[in-house]
Image 1: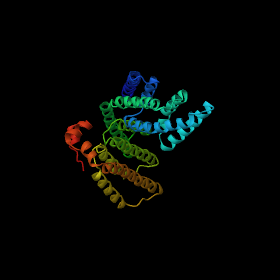
Image 2: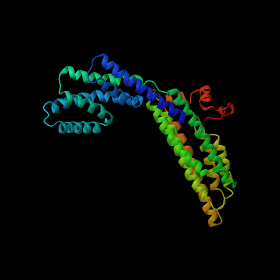
Image 3: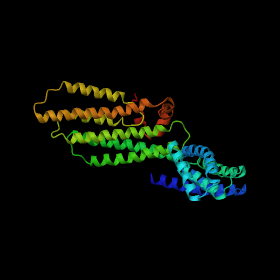
Image 4: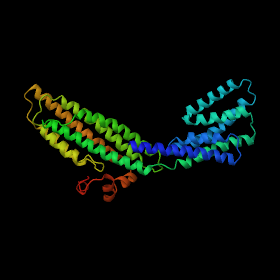
Length: 355
């Protein structure tokens, strides 16, 4: 994560430096007034993501027209410069905020100062200002085509494998607790740590989605959000386990089920079979002898809640798998060779039954 972050910062700094300089050079080459403004516009646009750059460029072209009209109406016979400029900014901000185009404010405010300073509203000057905007956003679009998407995706996949391993480890510790065995780790700390890391993974996946033109990268965001929900379930499950004063005999069956379920906490698995086996345990518990004491009743009730939590854990994965479109299924769950390469599992893992 730290290496990826550093590389992204380094690439961004290089793109901004070269892109801004190149924009100024092009503006000077065409003998435009205020050529340094082209560099500023390029800078303000490059700092956004690839998709945001495209959207922002469109907004800036549209709002440029409004800026030019406002400047013509307000600045042509401005008696008090600072008052008129304040009115100009007020109208500009209100318009951009209402349309959700906040990022377009800075560039248009800059263009507005040019009109205010020169008080030139000729077609040639308007063309000059439009060329500054056009050069800046064109350079930004071209430079934002360069991203560390391949490295970024590799880090995302690595984080997916890490998340699965951590969830399996936490489930193993919870199974040990239900088996009345000493716990080797602080499960509470492990769950809290993973919840925080999943927040970072969601941001990383969102950043990847915004910097690629593929039509399916939302898969990674959905995946980590699904794992976040599962982690929250384990949070509740651990709390409920701690409420059991005396581990009942039925808990051994649930512990064995959790150990069985652990192996299927992988990316490519629709948990139909796991849900079916869980339903069998629900049925078996209905035929258990009634509890003979209040403590046994409370413990049995907690076990039932634990089973419901495990069911919710699996349902989140089931919904995620069923929500994929055909393109996502083909790309991410398509073939054995691709799956093996993506998951990094050994051949035994790849032969698991995927329902």
